[in-house]
Image 1 (cartoon, rainbow, N blue to C red):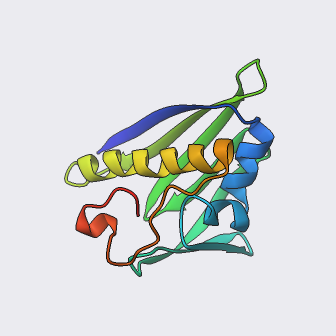
Image 2: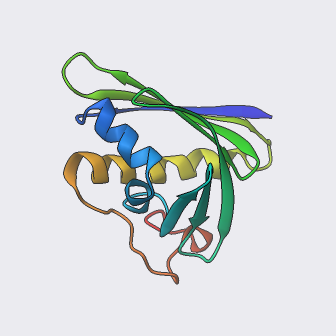
Image 3: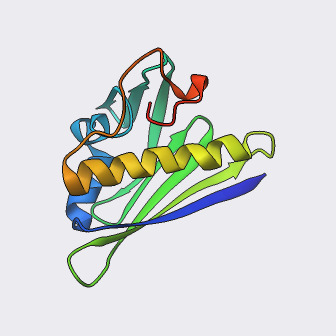
Length: 140
């Protein structure tokens, strides 16, 4: 088991980044086709038909968002960069060795989609059910 950690700098404020992570509308703009929250759970629906009910573990506005994600703990830490932007640290805890490389690379797809959505108001995903991560498309 290994942890995956990525850092990403965003020109947007921690408040705006947190809104994208912690709201149904925000997550829909970069992460999943649908990610509705209800009673402390997020119902993720992905373009390849996969679904997951994720529990929100910790939610500290503008600084920390942590969820259960496919059996792992996934944490987003947000820090003001001193210039109005955000330094984001994402940690995916205890990924099994046999899944590590796929998950490690997959987070780049999600994080760059977040940057496109939050900083530039664009969606980098293709939204094509025939062109998914399962078919080696990184822009799913």
